[in-house]
Image (cartoon, rainbow, N blue to C red; front, side, top):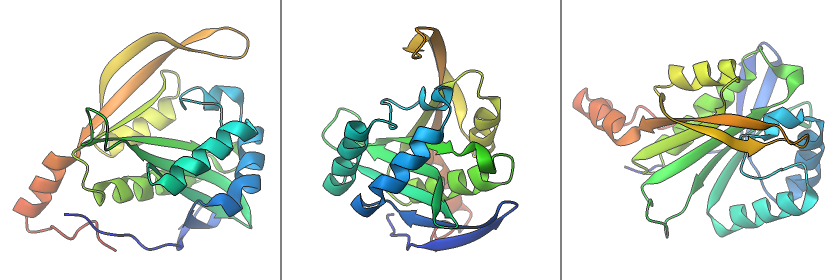
Length: 197
């Protein structure tokens, strides 16, 4: 079961109307401006520091190669969030995808993160992947709760896994989701198209 979601999409949040659209090279400057405003701690659960221009350029190359799908949350022409689905069909885990998400402090607590995580999750559900993972620092309780509400469960704790720019180490929690099981349950209940839009 694989479907294609169409973009742009618009959702109403407490922060106002948000547009979700697929990230492309033309968004590079806007995404860099967004990333450079993020607190450093928010960047720790991403594999690389996206506030660096060379990292952002490599990210866009991966999008163009098809290894990454990134959704931007845009409000009033400015990027206020990004949700990303990463997959590697040539790895030992071609059935597993990683979700990454980061939202601007300006719109936190206003439903933007929830809407973006749900949209990114729906995109992942439609990709044919069997499992999804997400990782974040253990103190990011709101983000952990958000993903748990989508059915993710804590699976691993990686001690001292990331080091911030001051040299302090932080633990990372890895949450996993068995998408294949959810898909099978939906089909058993007669809802195979529940994630199609």
